[in-house]
Length: 417
Image 1 (cartoon, one colour):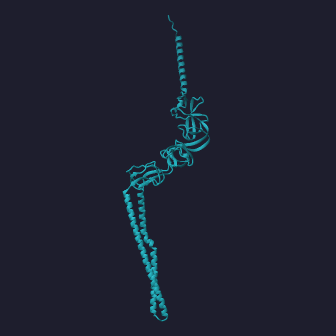
Image 2: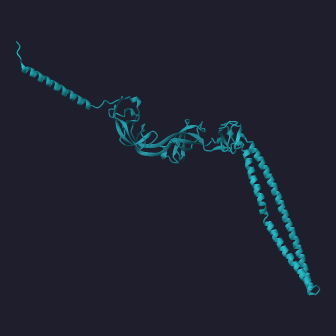
């Protein structure tokens, strides 16, 4: 028969409890170890990123922009009056001289006004001439009156002298002498008055003609204006060069001040570059530049910086110092590079995708095993077109990833395969 052994059952339970406790402790240790393990570094395809090496040496700061070639001498021809485009004589691209007629306008009202202005001027000139004759006739009459009075004065003076001599001889009475002397005094006074009247008439000739002259001048100015406006209906180039634009159609109605045509001198061109407003702060007049026409590179220098910002860019004018390559013409698209400054013994690297001037960014630096790259805080300084100054965080010879790594923002370490 079986014999009950309670001590064996107790030992068995204790053994099972020890096994269970050991298993729980093992699971806890494994779980703790796994939780402390770093996540595996994500893999990055080496062919999809761009690596560059940090260098120390001279750095040329540059900014780049696109633009067009434009003539330095440009003339927009405005309409001096309203009109209708009757005929476009020549088209853009033609060589023109100052007297070349580009297009013809018509304005019947203006031509009628010019005719009326001419007739009014002729009438005013006739009135002026008539008034001038009248004034001269009045002066002649006054001179004749003065001459007559002078002759009468001389006669009265001779008569008074003769009567004075006869009176001393007792041949005439005192009454007759007094009458002769009174006549002399009368003609002397009349002579003085007539002479003064002639002087006044002479002095007021210009004043008498001034009103008529002013009217003539006014009508002449008006006629000259109308005549020029009629002449301007034949729109001329006004300068030698090439006709660039005629933004009109035959039969189109235009108003005063509208642009009719643009003429430029293709022999002297300049580049108008559009530089991003964030990069234009260090540009100064006189800085050297290089203009790439895609058929040659021309040296130049900055001559003007537009003070206004338009669509996020600043317009910079560059005068061309070298000869124009073949194919260079107005409105040709070009690329321009402006040299800002030259720095010696500077730590620099290629410009990262999100690397701006005077900023701190996180760049992946390749580790010694050439397989892994870890995120490093890098302080950046002054920037150029393709390079940027490194202030802190990197050393010469370090290799960093310049490509966009925003996909791996959650990781501080990646594996490059």
